[in-house]
Picture (cartoon, rainbow, N blue to C red):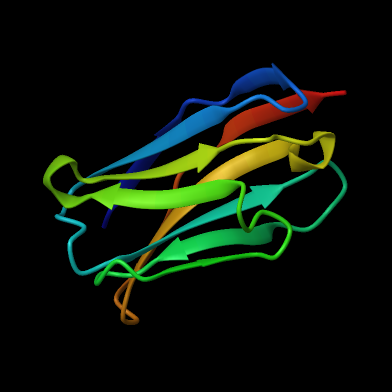
Length: 116
């Protein structure tokens, strides 16, 4: 299986920036699609962004233009650069690694808190 560990969360004021990292171990991530999700208190987990093995990216509308997902296969790491943060971006952010139907792994999450 793939083990994932997120880091980089914290508390920031609205308008600030954070960069989340997710390091994978156990297998190389090159063929994997890598995703970020988030879960706000009392709400369902929400998909945020995807980067495929060929580097294609997609974002939920609410973060388009503010967040950037990227990957470094040599470092087995996926990133989420978050800018112009809003209080509604608050939540626990999780990374997810998928490859066909064989792998679907999740990290433990990192807390992001944005104050107004």
